[in-house]
Image 1 (cartoon, helix red, strand yellow):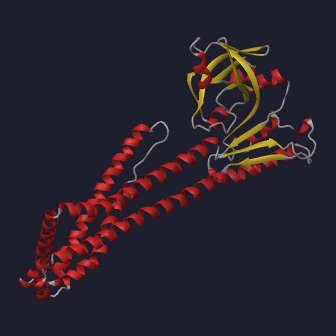
Image 2: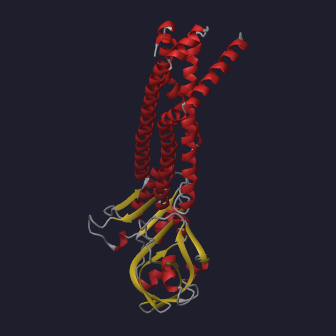
Length: 404
């Protein structure tokens, strides 16, 4: 019985292949819609997942696992005792193991000169731990060490943008940078490991110096912002509450502090990405359904043109199930071939785009989407081909043989 079924299936497969080979142009046009739908499905999933990863990476670069505190100056009058201090930072650091690393900053606009060229920059004084929080990369020179922070050494780091503008005059590392009456030595060139596009203290033209050095220059003994980082995004709400508690316990009750995090922004980005992905997937599925409708219409026309062939096969003893299987095989061939070609074009397009845009974002092919496109497209073709195949199987052989 199994052998009979196998031979029956093989015969239907051969007849379906021969019928499609005889009508190559019609088969190619029919599979075009499936090819577009399959390609769209692979591209939609790939672009959606890549876009989601890219957006979340940017938010995490700014600080998805960070909480940051500033003094609220818009409410009650502020006195010097309300300012954030290095002692506040130390107490927050002691909140282990919730706080993985903490740092403070103080920034102000300055006009500096380096290599004989003037630059309008942002001078940012940082404490120990800032490099880890902002994921700073130092491709040339070095970052601050503990001695730089302790001794108030006149050293600084500059962004790659400043370095490019001054490199034509001399190599920036080792050069003297001067603003007002103060001079410091450039010990390194830095960039953000994950770009924040100016949404943090790090601007295109930024000069980093140890915070004690800025404090001695400006005479201000406080920090403008305190950052604390936790090891998990899930712990950010607890971290935010901890920072608020520490600051309230160390300052007068009238002082107001703004303690925030980006967890809500991250959740919003994930929800928007999910909604966009679902919409795009809906469009891709609609394209496949449209392609399935095209397959059904073409097969109905095909059956009308091949009534004599169907009648002859039935007169020679072919069963309705064998006729149905033949036409289902034809629909399956068309949809599977179109899906495979569409998925292949999509994968090639993703690889090509990844080669061009590798520095901006990393494209990753979703092989699950490729498999889903093949299976779904084949299922759509077979599903829409069943009604025409059943119609062919139910044709009366005598009436079919009389057809012109």
